Image (cartoon, rainbow, N blue to C red; front, top):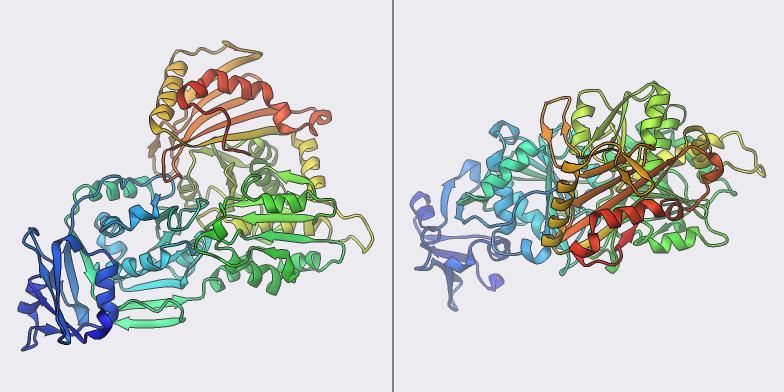
Length: 635
């Protein structure tokens, strides 16, 4: 419809624009792409009506039901900025990793625009006015449309420049890297992380601050408060940006620069790791490597890094093309959803090293030949070997940290190496404060997230390169024909030194929220009456609590972070509701048992943990509250 018209005649909807216009006519020429934007990017269409004639213009009117109309509020150096009236929308509270909902929710009128404008309303003006922001995402469905909306609202609020990944692609760790390298004021990440993508599935948005870390709760709480009172959206009338072409485009005093999504991140990785040592490993004829990008964002990074730079075979990368629906898959790198890679690694002639990453590239799974490395063990082993194998840590790590539900394997490494140790709530933002204060180098979460202070996000490819560095270092003097040190060798040697923390997580996804919340309240009531020394089957209670954390840097307090039952032998049962889903509630149960006896280290974790698992299900009355017989995922 827009292509048949050369201009729009606006009557009422932009009435104040006419008053400020220097034109003698009330016809305002707007490119067809701008009209397409008006239609596609959720101006309040219920408040306008169209009348179309055969003349080369048509009219937009404010309907009689509209209490207010869009008005021009500024024209800075050629950009028309319009105030679009809106109303609060319920349910826009930011969770652990941003705002996540079904795509159809974000496509509702003004849903995304309200949240983005509320963000700008929550930030001090000096944090964005005439500043630089980064924009990127995991390539999932709706990212392209959302990119254009975010760019226009950023321009409308006085941002000076947006750096956006080509085709809207930037992994979550790459956004953090770009923010830090380019000294940007912050950045938007369009992702629902490991959740499925496509028209019927999930979409998400979060904001990272100027050191590359996720926005703190002090900001996300303000955003939510502003979503409850928002009345206008400041929207710049600029055409949609061609995200396929590298380079900058100016619109008055606002610039959009499309950047290569890989180059800044790759440069950082080359400064952290010994690429030549890793290349020597990957080029060996007696070593094989497999990486599953799960049709997610790391598909854009895998070939440039692993193949082009490090010499891995091109066929070592599978599912390497990012797709809007992740190839109808669930881009979560665990034993359930990365089953194709697991089958390859457990086959008779499987590769020596296998890895996968998730939707937005911040999670990872590490596998050896017929061997799975738990994320809790992974971060502990990286920390124990970092100084020797990774140049970035040549002077030794500053400190170590883990999320509360993650096993205590890292604690033992910190104790042996004499390093400061922190236990924090789930959520990478808690690590960021410690890193910025120079207290933390290496950290991880049991939910397949591992990272360091090279950026302020967990980093899937970083973890893969860290493990490749450890294996390369351990085999750097091995001659052809000599038996190589394997992933399982490294892990078992670690267990022999530190003991093994048997660990498992049971996920019950998309439970009815009411039942899940009642279960947690029941458990809170239970711990309020608990006493040290009480018997739970064969286990003796040391303490039970609802984990609370006081940040040692800024003094902020995070409470009700998970119900813990800790027993005298070091065993733990933890119950949490996840904040990363888009529908219902995910109940997570964490079960851990420490085993110092090396003769028992080869036991299957589910066998070793069965008494604790049975106790957890009994104590929580999970089946009674949720109706669930079995978990959705076991890791």
